[in-house]
Length: 284
Ligand SMILES: Cc1cc2nc3c(=O)[nH]c(=O)nc-3n(C[C@H](O)[C@H](O)[C@H](O)COP(=O)(O)OP(=O)(O)OC[C@H]3O[C@@H](n4cnc5c(N)ncnc54)[C@H](O)[C@@H]3O)c2cc1C
Ligand code: FES
Image (tube, rainbow, N blue to C red; front, side, top):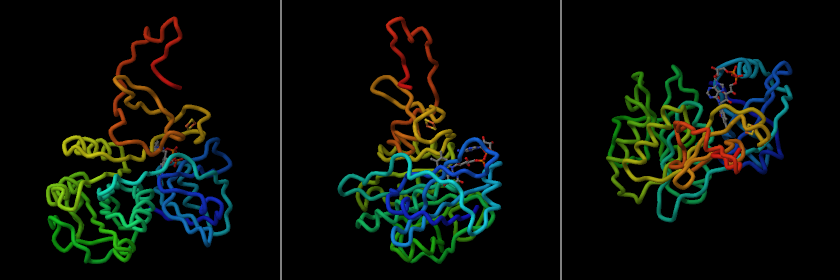
């Protein structure tokens, strides 16, 4: 996992948490690659990204050096919205899904909204500084827990989870940690509003928990994209639409969408329903 700092004043001024950038990783690649914005400083023009090498493009990014000038487009897409009055925000991140939620945690805290950030991490090394947690979490789900140093300093409660045993981490999936936190607090500090970003399996697990606990929230999708600005439909995801469903472009209507709107499996499409009157089940 790597951090990347860009000097991009226009993006730093405009970016909202949840939005993303399209970056050209190498001239040999036809398509840019999307990355969430993790942090900005409108005064210095700094924009931070946090990424993991998974293939060709991110492999090229790893070789970038200070002074390189990649083509970057953004900020793109939708952003997170504030929880309803009186709710506290619980942010659930998996791996590099931490990036948009770190940005959102800062903003929520600045607006005086209570934030708990839970991060599941399976990498061997922890890429950010940690400290013994001093800000308490009702329910006390981990003994001698660690917290992210930067967030702890800013008054944001953080807890870490891993299925590999790591000292100071909750042992299990981050969705298990969320379950423990919900059990421990049981609405003591007000109703919970969820914000989620991470691998699909984790987001499905958290969506299931949200159903069980009757919680609302928002999810930031990190699936495949092509153009990134609504021109190709390469990012279509199925969402509930009244009693039916439809496709939305996750680059323009998303990547942030309501948690209960995502349809994780596409229902079998009856092609006859694309009927003579030209009615279509999708909105592409
Ligand atoms: C809105 C959005 C925000 C994102 N934010 C971040 C971020 O902050 N940090 C980060 O590291 N990644 C993020 N991603 C994922 C990132 O875009 C991909 O990891 C990247 O495009 C992979 O490019 P590549 O050329 O290295 O991989 P490729 O060579 O194109 O693919 C290599 C392998 O990775 C898989 N892969 C490709 N794209 C994705 C994807 N989106 N999700 C899961 N697997 C994929 C492929 O199926 C293949 O197996 C985000 C994606 C979206 C849509
Ligand atoms: S990626 Fe092209 S429309 Fe979304």
